[in-house]
Amino acid sequence: DLSRRFNSRAAGGFIIWDWTRRLIKAGATYYGDTFILVAQARALRDGLRLAIQAGFTNIIIEGDNKIVIQALKGMIHVPWQISNIIENIHTWQTQGIQLIITHIFREANMTADWLSKF
Image (cartoon, rainbow, N blue to C red):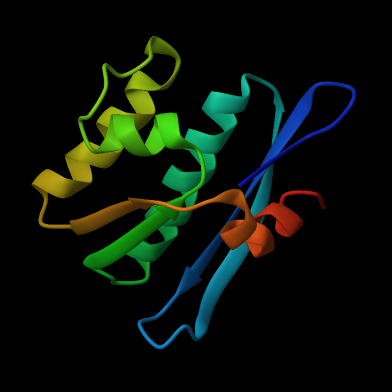
């Protein structure tokens, strides 16, 4: 998820759970001055990268940015600002990583939102 401060700097947060909802890893990254869309896509990619590095190959992605989720699912034309990020994620899919991608409402993503504020 994303926090954008008054000074227009952005940070993103992610949470990795196992299938029983046991916390595996959580984190947040400061992205500096950037578009909200880019920060949201980067946070998703950063969390996904860590899940893959931890050995997970069947991953459910839940994100609250509808544009990022629809771009990942091929439902819309990928905005140029995030095309490289979406391409990175699709490359992992060609390497045997199975993704289920779902949109969730921001209220269901409160923990990631909270992380992004630190």
